[in-house]
Image (cartoon, rainbow, N blue to C red; front, side):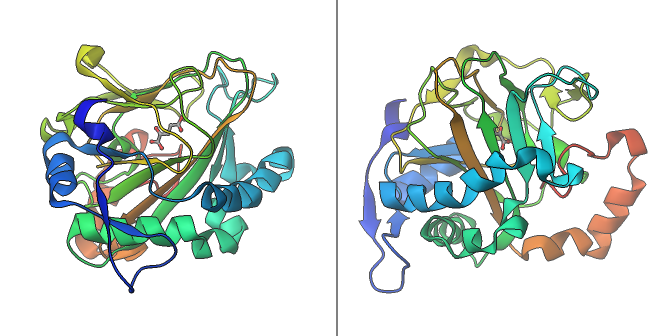
Length: 275
Ligand SMILES: O=C(O)CCC(=O)C(=O)O
């Protein structure tokens, strides 16, 4: 994990919510240079448990959620009737608005503003619960592939594990500096909603195991991957994106033209509004 494991953070003083800590200059430089950052202790265990208590009930009733918000990223095809392997809920903040008032959300938004160097607002979130003991990996990809835009939006993406994240249960991996190498071609998985970057040199990848309370941050062009969950317990993660202008950015005339000008097959249907 090398320097990515740098624990140095400093207090931001009285303006911040909860246990907010701001990034150091070194961490900001590291993010800009590498395209990702692992922060081993951003929030308390209690703050993560607050999120888990809001997300768990949604996953307990996964089959009853509207089909447009839930997917099994591990299903081999759309018609598979097998038990869910990698359950994804899109925009759980719409299903439980308390998520946006959580300490974790507010802390990540404050950090995103620091990274972006300006105020930011929510653009997208999803949550993924990988079932115990299954072989579902989340393939290498750039989040930008799901956006439907040609120009990457200047968003900041948080991956927030809901327990310790380990090599065994599917922690995050990144290809350092891949955000500087442009947009890669992605192939669509047979199930219709998972995209996978082709020609990734993962020999340079960095794995980012984290204790509970830690997060990783990456940019829309940073190549990333999570491994299968080989442990006997669920591996949960909440993923939240922030950007300048928030969701309004997608509706700027230039962005609309880009989206609508793209051939239908290139537009995302996997994670609506993923940016
Ligand atoms: O949590 C995971 O397994 C993968 C999440 C991810 O890759 C993403 O949100 O882009």
